[in-house]
Length: 527
Image (tube, rainbow, N blue to C red; front, side, top):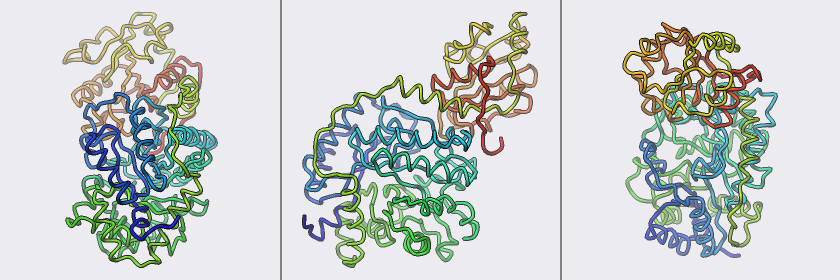
């Protein structure tokens, strides 16, 4: 099918669509499809939860029929498109990252605790995520994260990274990528040249990595080098500055000709599709007040697919007036080639698939058995049993009800008194004076570091004071980076990390506590 110049440029755009959106905005998207021939759409949950509002992600959002609404919108948009659309999404830990009531798998940081000998489990996770997306009508997953989380205070990567070890991150990112590709979708390494050692959230400002090129090649760039050698075909470039790669200039990598064309394409030999990180993010969107200029700068730097553009008509015009025919053909050819490879030929309604949650839970339990990690004292059971026999065992839950799966799973063996932390008043030591052993279960409210991962710091202070006075055994469910918010960790008798708050993870933690299985996971980094 012949394309006009403007239609070819339109194929390079993948603006954001929001599942929970007004009819007016949905019709605006339809206009972009009809009149500007955009090549794809990237789905987000809603406007208030999109990347530009990352700092407000704690809001309570509408979750009613999200998955069904997305399926209907995909069909509606595909139906009017002259060329079938590439449908993409961020589903790093499954569709549940964006779409409620769909399958969720562990965060990358949890997967990173799995022994490297069990890398096949990471591949299988990627394959399952890919299958879920494919049968939902989605063609591209903007995952995996190939960033090395060398900065534990990183505000935006953290739990999304496989960890701080470059070899393991490289191996697991590739396994996840290959699993998704094996399922019949396209996957994408991100965020080139490496977002792990940053302390600024690129949704809100520009992170700067003040490392030499040699240091970057040895650390941040390592997984990308290995990925390219292994045949990775799509890479997303992040909104972060690496002055050593740009002649000292603090320019976002996503719009840097030096980094994208000079380093990634020419020096590293990458010939696949290059995707810009979301162009609505403040680290780049604030730099260009003229609509369309940012899109041109991103394209001119070497990006092939422009994600989350908020100025599609203006961006098309800027590129049309400035691009060479050869440069346009290069990017357009890559997009059409990908569509042909994925077999996107016609629009047919996607029937709502039935997810096999029982089988998914079984697989998630297998993963939990491999990432559960003991940080201190693998065998606390005898001390807890002795305390129970003399009625001196107490079980305390933080940030969750005392009626939780972990406590329920051990009750027949360890039936001591249970408390929610809110029941203990201002002086925990006095409230628990008659107990010699305290089993603590923490359920971290948020995976993101904002506001101490959602944890009440006053309760954490009381917990630390209690650990000095009593024998405290800590079972921790959540982002392990949050453990660093607990003071006086050396006073805890036991520390076990279950990572996820999944029911199956709590059941596995209970099995370990009761001596029915050994934990084989290993937490990367120091805490």
